[in-house]
Image (cartoon, rainbow, N blue to C red; front, top):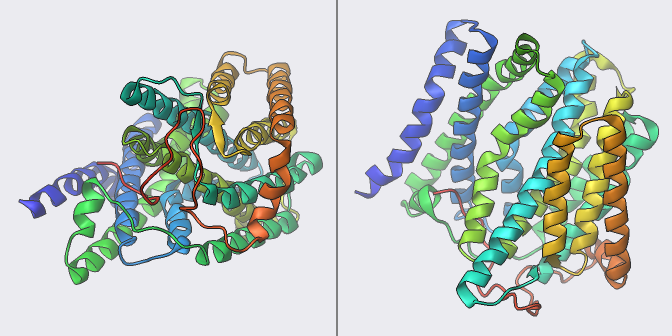
Length: 424
């Protein structure tokens, strides 16, 4: 019975990738909307397989470094699409816009939709279970280090809108920061993984079978993603042109939504199971990856694609998008400085994220930036005593997850060690 339960979701995902693989191997070029549907479905299905394998791998890989590496693996589908755009921009400068769109869209989607929904779901469940209305979700104190890395990366990334380019030196600096992040995580203890769904069933296999299964799933998912990234990206652009839809917007929102859907589902499942701090902590790790590794590799992909060492030059529209993304990130970091995610911040992030679709013009984007910055300034003033400890946290020893963090505003602290579970 157990093997059948294990195979069912994996077979379903494999079947969903099959049409795209057949089309790709046969060299067929379907109409853009059909290509978008086929390869987009394959990317989503492969993302779930990748997430399940990454979660199950925690049984054999221990420590904080495992969590950081597995967080990178979980967002590889998104990286594959964005790096394709950056690589192609080396020979076709028009693709710089798509690389910037995909990067800013994935960042704003993660924070504006992912963070806020997780917090609101978590707080609603606390009220349902306890009968008490709570105003903030409390994070484990060990997450201050990752928040510190995110704050530093956000400060460094301000050079992008300031200079109007994603330069190679900036990319190398962000990659250096990511390497330091991995090194710090390698020295951070982590609790035993608590897996659910397909990941739990894979993790329960005998050691040899488990490792073979995990490696096979990694290889399968990677092959599907690599085969689908280019036609999926091209399908986005061609579909926009064919249907008269702004292809910049399709690349900015549809591609990240497809590649990040498993991660969002995992985080929401954490919140539903009463582990709201683990859910938001997982998304903080993903945001650190995006703001360091993803941004840092774009100028390298551009260089390898023949674009030279000058980096990706941004136009006015792309600079606006980076300013808006940076302002949103600043609000997220400022609101979390006290390791408490208040309800007002979640609603603000979600509301402002939705407003940008109603008011998409240049003036509206800068007005939104002003609102983000005003709220961030208020949060910074309120949490000012936590600014220096947060910025210093990546350089301090002895910070680990699982440290006691007192519950406040009626929010229960997490009793179990942090875990990374998969969608069931």
